[in-house]
Length: 134
Image 1 (tube, helix red, strand yellow):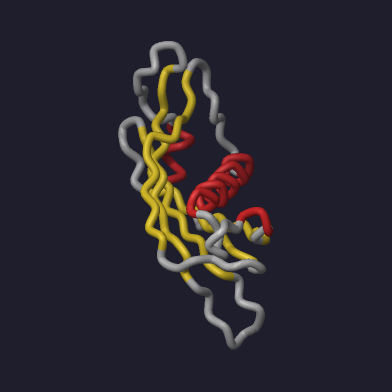
Image 2 (spheres, rainbow, N blue to C red):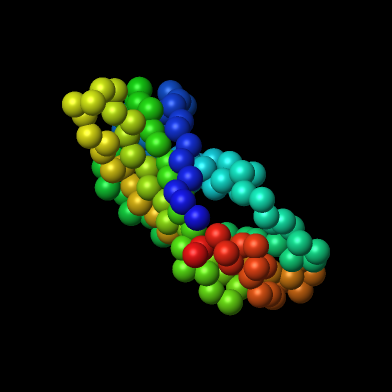
């Protein structure tokens, strides 16, 4: 599957007392992109008694984001396993003109694991989801 992209405006409320976007808000940006991506792909995210949970998030903060800014959050599914799939993401600036290059603010990997909703045990990844990672 190709890269999914969403553009967001940094809100004044995203900024903390240090004058930059709070580190926890980066996770909200990733979540926004992930939820829009999940809505856009023709998969059954809640097949039967199983569904995805976020099992791990690894984020590398590269540069602070200052307000005002427009950012692009990208997501690319990769590395499907038996019961999980990894989602690679980046948060970059949206250049205002052709002379500017995008600035990398953060890169992240999110691991989704499919579980049985009753037992909480991992279950095999649905075929429709597995195919997204190839």
